[in-house]
Amino acid sequence: MKIGTLTRMALLTAAALILGYLDSLIPLVQGVPGIKLGLSNLAILFAVFYMHPGETVLLMLLKVGLSSLLFGNLIGAAYALAGGVLSVAGMLLLKRIPGVSVIPVSMIGGILHMVGQCLVGFILISVRPVMAYAPWLLISGTATGLLLGVAARGVFYGLERYERRNGA
Image (cartoon, rainbow, N blue to C red):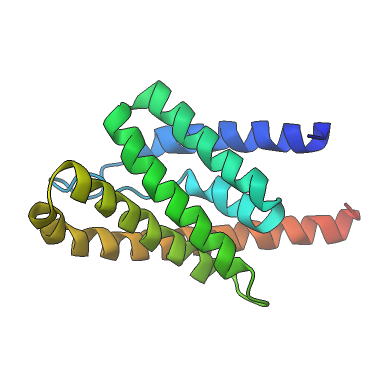
């Protein structure tokens, strides 16, 4: 791995961890566990659009592993890993369509992250409680994916403008 790529990975991993921690401090829906803004996924979205797919997968694994080690537990890691794998796979596939923007990519990422969490819930809990909870998760995944996509679009626009202006 080149030094520039390694540096970018380190910065994005640190950003994902910091954003994930900040995200844990923001209560969204009382009484509904697992629904968060997913701020750390801004780092993953950046990787989907600006890095190699293998690097994106590695970033997701680092984010899930380190977050679980620092702030979580094994059960939470299982949910995060399943959601992360499905989310990144879906985002990388959708991004391959020419002209697709970050907003639908982010939305599919949010939806698939929740699908992954539901699959783990089916295995660990049972089908009935997860089925009652799944619609709320899918709605929140869609909404947070939209919000993060809009935020990422603004960041990407600013980065591209900066690069054009400075010849980077």
